[in-house]
Length: 76
Length: 194
Image (tube, rainbow over all chains, first blue to last red; front, top):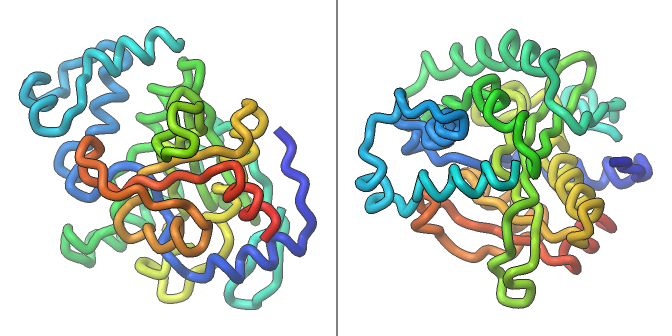
């Protein structure tokens, strides 16, 4: 992948960006239980660190860990 | 590409890699973690950075074997300035492009020293928009015409909506109530021409 933009673009872009916060991904509540990390470990078939019942997790968050794993495995 | 050195105002060359290598993870471990720890030790849990618990090393072990995932790292002055993980197995939610494939930004972080909430004066400016640019180009390369989407961390919503031109689709109860943002082909073109 080649990104070929003139220096002016980056100069203008930095001005637009300013000093605002930048970040995407997992919310602060998950500091206690990092869902992304749990999903990562589940991708590898490791459920040992998973502290919640998957059925309860689905009810609470809507995340179906079995489905997620199946879809990602299929893609791989 | 270039980042702005905030202290002097000058623009310095930066390199974007379309991979997070072991070397980048070592840089993350040696520089980001200590800086984040120092900051977190001095502030209440709720005030600590929203991504302070992310373990990029552990995440890397999960995605490296998977097709459909791509990672990016931004380096400037031999320092790691930004990390991003995207996938191309997600579909659009915005009505005008509903169901079409997008590049979804799964995780995006900037170095602790570039954040106003951690450093009294950020070191470099422009990391966020370069990462958005990279995800747009990744989308174009995949044939998705620049369509991208992401769930923003709460403190970063202003950045995506006002500084990048994403469309806000509201809070997503299926993704821990984070606000979901999406960019159309037209918005991506506008972003790249700004």
